[in-house]
Length: 584
Image (spheres, rainbow, N blue to C red):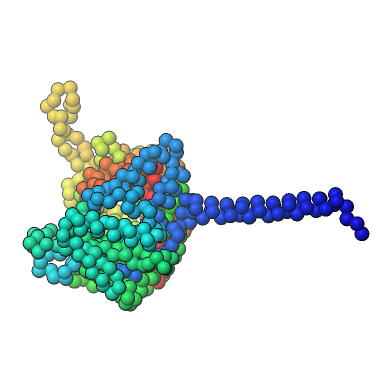
């Protein structure tokens, strides 16, 4: 059989074509793999790791551990993807400013000294509230910063270069080998040690960027095992902190990775994460024995297209399991106006308040903060919220705030009636009478309204062409029974807004509110909602400490659009919640 030259050429052409197609498919697959592994959009599903490898350096008793589980440059790249062309230059400038602020007064430059080797984890831990373990000479908090290295040689060169410059500038640089690890540090002059500032740990204080006088570093890992998860550069404010970190790695039972509370908490946090935090909560300082004590708190933060989505797990002493009670927003929200920048809605306020009171009683500072939060409302209404209102609210409830023209706020509270509610309403009337308030009724939007009022002297009495009446009536509280709900407000105007909301559109119909609850689990125990730009001035006025918190996290607060929190039940003593921070 003779094969024609034409057929040979055709077969060669098809062989070449098949090889070309296979090559193109290979290149396409490789390109697709590269794009899917390098695109910053991957961060929507979480960072490269789910838990911090640096937890092995930290003791089980650490007060606080916080980790970012993604390279800062990838995080910036993701922000650029979602930013508009007009916002990108500003976004880049903000990231640059953060880098400069964190390294200010250290003599370090991020692009030159850190970027060539930094990996996918940055972990900061408070190692101990007292480095010297001697309360007689004051307290100095121990801090450890562990930065993963993706290029061990470059990170080693960075440390060698840094300490070489330091040794030329001062003769206080010391070096030692501790259990096979080289530790470099600045030796504190004896004459200055007595005068060094010793201050207790304050979690709300702003971080100082100036390097401490006893600044110490160490590198864990080597170039022969660059893929090791323990390739880290350690920074600390004392060489003792570095030594303790090395000891924690050697003795696995000492480090945080083997803490039962740490393991239990993060097993319940399943969503993708780019950052997390773990707090060992302080135990009772009052000598009380609460029914439920709070042991620890874990927080995992992920990225959402509209902001940050966080899950929390609160480990308690009670081995209880409870499913979420709601599958949709409570109907009591229909009385919260759409303009309300703040709302809380759930069920069974009596039980919630009992649990909260028991939990916060273990910490005097937290207890004072909760008391201050309700002090203004109690002063306006002249009631004890827990005894006079919370105790009979066993069904739905919603609490909202309505800004007014005087840059303050009116409160609206709607609660489902119970068998005991009428008795408690009569008690409220008795409290009003005891304060010499007048109790009157009138009709508003076809509803019977009861008002507790007080007669006052007009501020404009005696001024021409201002007011003719010397007496004014000031509403101290307004209530109405509408269907199965009792509604309380701090003014007639707020009551009118609440009744109007049920007719024309409440907060539930507000598009911003819907966007703010969309990423949250549909099965939950209710919502805490805060429209930050609208009520920023109100909360800053009510809580002066908030200004300090804003300064410590200014980039976040500058872009914060709303904050929404929901509880999602309890599993064997671990209470779960989800937090959505919607960002501009």
